[in-house]
Length: 113
Image 1 (cartoon, helix red, strand yellow):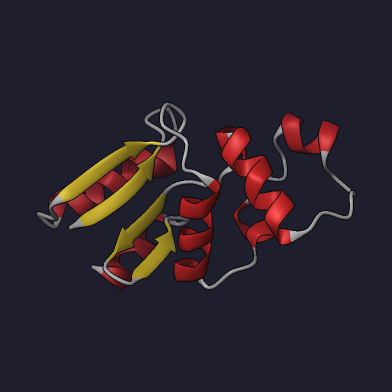
Image 2 (cartoon, rainbow, N blue to C red):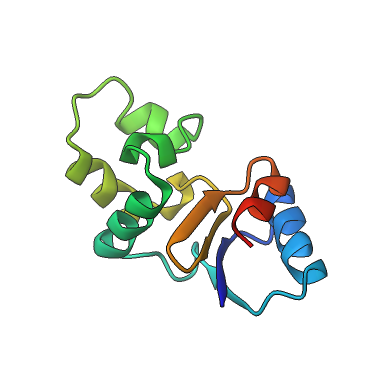
């Protein structure tokens, strides 16, 4: 089972989903803007990605620039901010088993399927 945290309005997210479908993957699609991940779920995703929470933040979003940029935030605070503002989560995130990848570029998803 492969899970994609998906934004249908995002070209990269749509391209990543198309790759998964072309590979006949069994897919669970989570529209994370409609159903935001909890702080615990985000923590688990970040561990699978083996990155710092800040690396999952879309830093060019107005929410980030206006409210958080340049502030000294803990990892826990950054995760909470993403949970409360899912628009800040980099997309798409694809998880299969104990592996995860951010689909930028979309072809990176091939590494885990």
